[in-house]
Length: 363
Image (cartoon, rainbow, N blue to C red; front, side):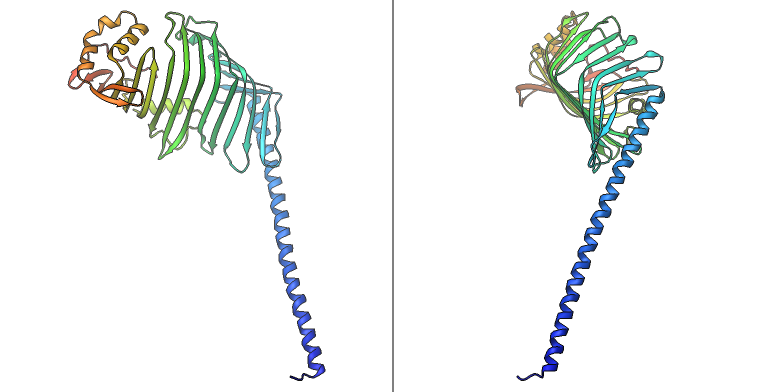
């Protein structure tokens, strides 16, 4: 088809103009992307420096004096980790409570808080840990080959925490107080408390080859154990004073669901699950499903821990064995029965066990 030269030229010019416009639009879009990336980068840099400034202010505040009656120190503190983390290193950490109730020092601490995970921090803990608590008769020197810890916090205070140690070794130079311990060793030990939703908290702990040497009973049997317990209705957080939060929860009749517990000690293997609560007087109430591998092993264990009690509680042991049923467990054949607690008194069915009630827990 014949087309006039003038129309052909006009068509060509229009095509070129359209192409240039499309390239301009593409170039403009690319420029916006580059600009956005630069803006976000500058915003992140500002975020990091703001976090560093806040951390510096917090360290200065802690070093300035007691907070809630507690003094915390971090000598040789340095902050780094740009651009994605906030890293804190302390050459030596210290802690003290009012009236010299407790004083502690730590060999060193290296903590990391990812800025993309606000409120979370994990750390490597350097030995030794020195703890002096004259009221409890503790003058501990503790070491380990590997120690780690983590915390989660929010605007309301502490949300959760955990720690884990390998080859733990603690020596007590003053085993004369309320806790007459001479030494504690373990191949591994760990513990944590984490939110479980709805104001509940899950507490977990485990130990391997735990050896306790008592000033009054000598070497106690080696312990392997683990437990998972849900604390019901603690609250939305543990607050700025977790010990007080948990103490107030207990005083209000705190309820604990024992999801699983296992203890292997001195030839006895015990397992339990159930629910416990505390009365205003500090006495235990609830129901426990108890499993034990052998009534003789259980009686031997009680005798080891409290010499003279095997004969004293022989009727209770016989009743416990008679009212139990055989079951299979991961540790092999065992016997199982239900125990009820009413203000510290232990019941087997409708019969109270002929043993001393569990004394009140002082809070």
